[in-house]
Structures are given as structure tokens and as C-alpha cells.
Length: 212
Image 1 (cartoon, rainbow, N blue to C red):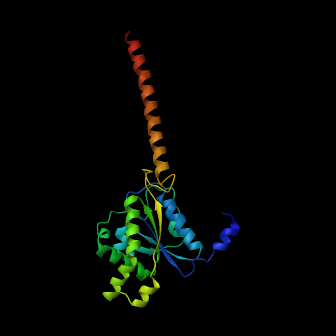
Image 2: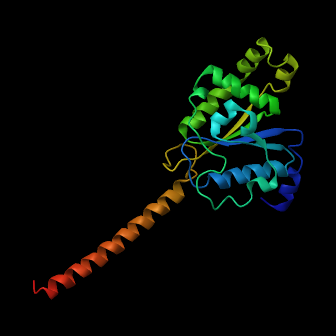
Image 3: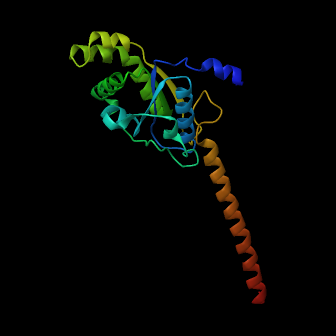
């Protein structure tokens, strides 16, 4: 993308709020993804929130959903795993859990969600998106949000980033984490081969010395 295209993007997200979370098993590259999403969101003028501990943080709300700034994601791309945490969340598999998650997003004005995770995480995100309208209707019926607020947050946009070392997901040539996992495997194989060759050489010398 050239600098002219980037200039056109400036402030196109003004007045909007978005959040990013990582879910499921963590993988190398998730921090780079979080950093890229956060900084591009800020660049286009949007309010960007970091959701800590995956879907569990979205269900629990409170301090688990924090407004990010440019420095929030500084010095993280070299770190392993995900700095915003990742947790399995049984509550999110229930209707009540997804209602709580929807309420916490609406409270922050968030209608754009970026989910970085594997098959289960992205399936959960799709279910959440498909139920969004009915979740808001239920919150209105229970008196937890107003009808006006529900209309203002009527649509939820979701972007899924495939984070998995398995590289077993359609729609992408290489999932986030797969390349690093393959490199680690090759490094270990090379180390084992070197050790095996050295051991073989030492063994031959020992046998020769023994006159075998």
C-alpha cells in the first residue's frame, strides 16, 4: 500500500469503536497481529479496545476491556504467545454468556470486533454475529439497554484472523503461528541430527580404540 492510499484512510474510522481479542491456543505471531490491528485502527481514527483473556474477558467485562493507545502495543512483537491473554471460555458457549458479552460491548460502543484464533474461536465469533440482533432485543426486554442504544449498535462487524500452529484452516495459505512452528521443528531436527552424527563419530572412535 502506497503512502497516498494510507493518507486516504486517515480518519475514515472516526467516531467508531473496535476491539481485538485472541482466543484458544496461543501462537507465535498473535502479538504482531494485535499490534497491526491496534495501530491501524488508531491510524484511521477509531477507538481501539484490547480485550484481555479472550472470550472470557468479553463475558466478564470491566477491566478486561481496555482502551488502547499507540504505546499499548509497543515492544511486543518479539514476545511469544499473546500479551493480551487467551482463555477457554465455557460461558461463551451459552446464550447467557453471549448476552453478557454483547452488553459489555454495547457499553463501550463497540460494533467492530477482530478475533484472532482457531476453528473454535472463529466459529464462536460467527455464532455471536448471527445472534447479535436477538441478543440486543433480549437486553432491551430485560431493561439493561434502551431501544435507542440497541438501534445505534444494530450491526456487528467481525473480522477473523486465523491463529493456529496447525495450518489447517481454509481461506489462507499460512495461518498465524504455522511458519514459526515449522521453523522450530526444523531447528530441533537439525539439532538432533547434529547430535546423532557426533554420537556416531564418538562411538566409532571408542570401538576402534577398543580394537573392535
